[in-house]
Length: 480
Image (cartoon, rainbow, N blue to C red; front, side):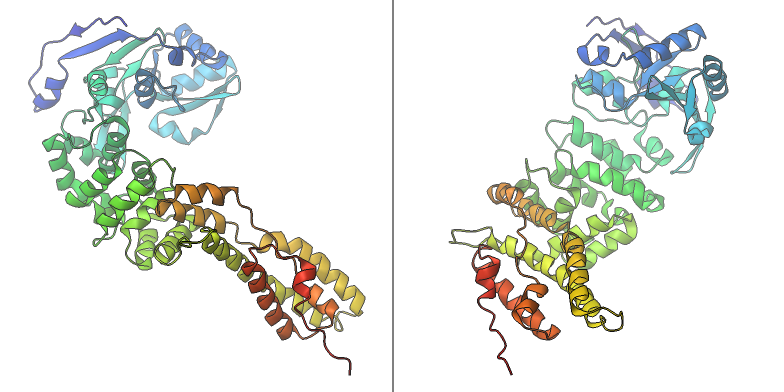
């Protein structure tokens, strides 16, 4: 890589001295990596040629630049340009290029579609008014001013299509040194958007090798502004919190959320079990847990999950997983000194499926009891109930039961049992109420009791007993 720094004199004026100290030079260099070259699809080539022809500057911006400098091909690529939204619209319309999703236009973003690819392009901006959540912006052609409004130095760089890096705030140096710093004053950057507190922790978990090296001014600014997160929507907080939980140094970062007074404003319990969290964070290493699996270790009671949901609007699946883990983490565990340590977990899944199936059975039983009102004879009712049973059986298993048990095994630090559970499939219980009716039992209540007894017998056999063997335990009614 060739470096060509162009140095500026430091400017100390207008109350911006700290920011200008960071603006001592524009650092440039050439990037020519396989990851960078792989971006040049037919769509991107067409896009860059159009901007060159129309004499508008276009560069890769933000996180994609950071990833490329780290030798990673970015999943998403954002673009910045000196062209205004109106100029881009005229340019794309004249070239016959389709534009989609015009919701971002008021913020300066136009999405163009070329060669079956979408390209999100945003006009350079400066923030005029901010309220901690949203910003009113004005368009500019000054790349440095746009960089000034970004949150972290490692996210404030641009990359030209000839491979030239444009770095105004030492982002490349920070990236090499594994440092996460705000652009300019941390206090000012945070007050522009309080969600940047969580973004700081998120990128810290992605960039830093060894936890603990924080700028004291940054931590002070976070503590002073933590209450500003109270005005941020739960959905936005949950997106960032999940990414923190999926990153590195999670025990260190969650401890900081509590030490700096952030936790109460993002839905976390004030009396969290940090000791349990530290233990579980070690248990799940290398097991790719869901964010809720790790977060649940902070909760002492199920009501903590409910309160989190009220604040963050988590999904139903996430809430159910949290409730399940808090309830079962101490009561559902492997069978010690048993040749089949996985069986308690398997029994749980079977029992949950049984509950769902029992509800379906009651529906079928009600239909059969109404056969006379429907004008059906016994044979028609049997056919109808049997067909409905076949349709409903796949639906009467709790589809998330196995997933929840797998997450519990991660929580408990049982990687071996986790592999076994992932290979195991729920066996179908071989006996139905229809089978018992054919033996001669007609009472719905008696059929239900027999089914439960046979299911317990089947579980004790390790799910090995078949229909005929199970039905042999059913006593046939005596003929009158």
